[in-house]
Length: 149
Image (tube, rainbow, N blue to C red; front, top):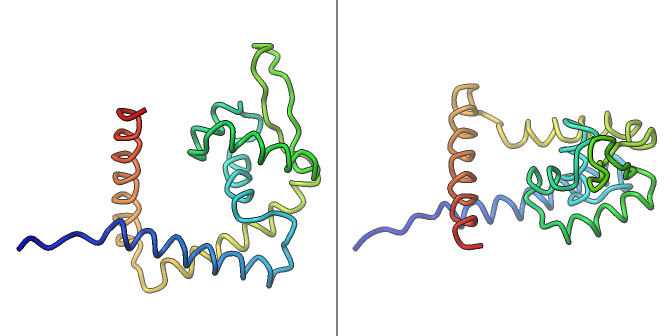
């Protein structure tokens, strides 16, 4: 009998447990302004501020409808602002506000803490190999999803 791979099951378990731990670390650091899902959006914006909603959707792999409602909440809380593009009036860009930039350093520290937890006892080579494999899995899933849409 062929043994069944557990990769997807393990990824789901890792996701669930890491979300729980990340939320606890955020609480312990008294960072309750953003929930983990909003933090995912902010993570992308901290790396590339002033990007279109379309690009943000691609980078977060969130549907535009889900992303729009999350951006509404982030904008109401004063973390982002929507700005019309000067190049294309139909395009809206997402920019960070000063309020957000003040929190960024604290969230980066929490993220570094999570990275230490994830990669405890990994060599740099193991970490790089692992991330390359994860990237390949993500690319496979994206490719498959595009065929089915």
